[in-house]
Image 1 (cartoon, one colour):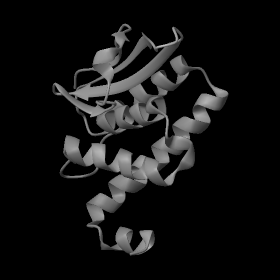
Image 2 (tube, rainbow, N blue to C red; image 1 turned 180 degrees about the vertical axis):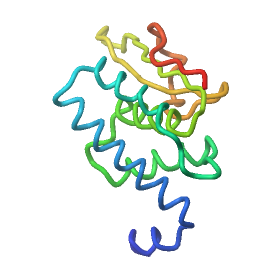
Image 3 (tube, rainbow, N blue to C red; image 1 turned 90 degrees about the vertical axis):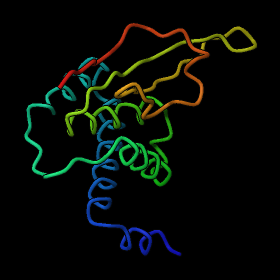
Length: 145
């Protein structure tokens, strides 16, 4: 089944969420090329000031699905940082409390590696594969809405 046919068969709310996710992934990818991480975080926190026009908000699982699905079809969105920032944007947009986190660890040959993840309501939304191997840096963008 083609990607377009699968998309058309989705419910309207899922289509909307998938498009929003793809847009956030692309905007964040471009934003990180031209702006600092701090500037991106400030822009994301402004999202909570905008009113959501939808009567119901997507679940955390639906947000995770949208970010993961959109990132599969956008080659520039494979990074955990970009996916986590996009998930954070959606969580802020839909008024979920969220915590964006970056962690670091040494790999087997002694060089540093980093990983980003987002949690909401005590659950991982992105990056849940290996965050326990990483020493977490201070929290970024903790929002209580």
